[in-house]
Length: 78
Image (cartoon, rainbow, N blue to C red; front, side, top):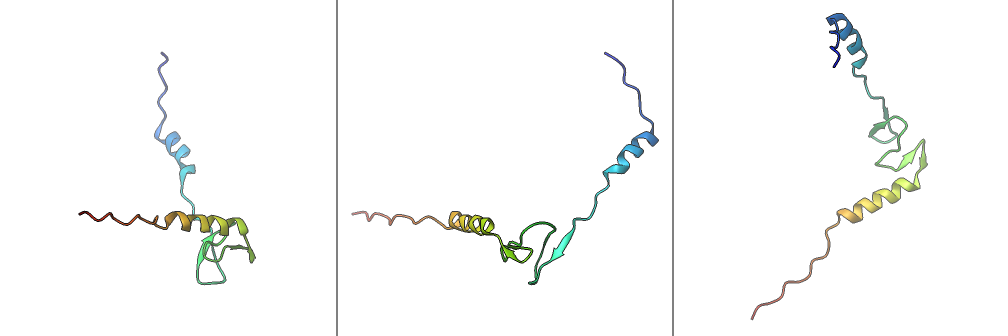
């Protein structure tokens, strides 16, 4: 095995200087909501003022999955 060379504090900090977090670009919608840049609005299902059909189908599918399944009536005991 080869002994690894130790990095100085300056070298380590120089490398970590690129790890800083940046703000996420947020856009106000025509309604009262906000959304991420370059994404469709979840409330209205539109992108750049145009309706997005795939998003609407996806939301409808989520709603049907979340709906509770109809339970069978309990059997009466004698």
